[in-house]
Image (tube, rainbow, N blue to C red; front, side, top):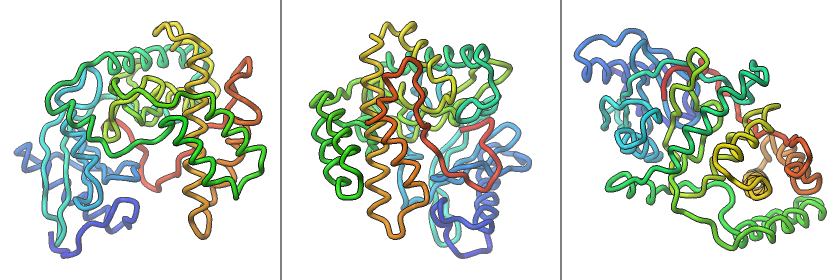
Length: 335
């Protein structure tokens, strides 16, 4: 490459940076494959540079920013079948004066059905949801060993409910910024939770519907294992439910039917985790000046959960977790 500047973090990338990343991704793929991989298209991502080819996907991450791509490439060859994408190569590459981590994957057939499953009727949604629950159940039953076990235990990322005291502490940190009814409701939910959470089941921890691929009405892969860790099955169930839009009840029913989870225990576990997600986001927002534009949405979501007790309605109607849009092509066909 002729440009001497290092690639910045993906979230700070300009269109010029995306073009330079594409050039680097193309060179990496050509070196590994021994032939021209063809054109590469930038895909939506907040944490990594992701480029899609006809047969391959290349991921790049600023080497100094985080090591989550290393986690994904390390786990790739150990995951149960149907999870992740086949890894062709990984390593580091100099880009300008900086270094990037890279992962080259086989492109899996399919495209994301989209967060909220917006284009699916109840029957089509149920068909995919049951497949997703089955894939996650296989992940939760997996017993990793060696490097895979060490990688999951070393994960530095933990989001969501992490025990009663942690959620109560979060409630204290945001109490000055919220109406009393919200912090009291949040504390009441925290008080009903366990003192400690389990950490003995492999979980994806980011299994929203944007990370699933579907081809011809069949789930072909769950991608992006960069946040995978040990936890509890509910860490995944809550994300699958929250990003299923109007089909959230189908998700809860499928989990109960396919995993023999007690319905009330499932709702309580999801409520705790949803409340923790919202509290974490609110605390992050109030510590920024100016506060992010999405703060009001998170506060309204917290009111639905802790005052409206949305998870306990006959048909759950909770505000979904919203994801910021990224102005590049939508993710499809690759990790």
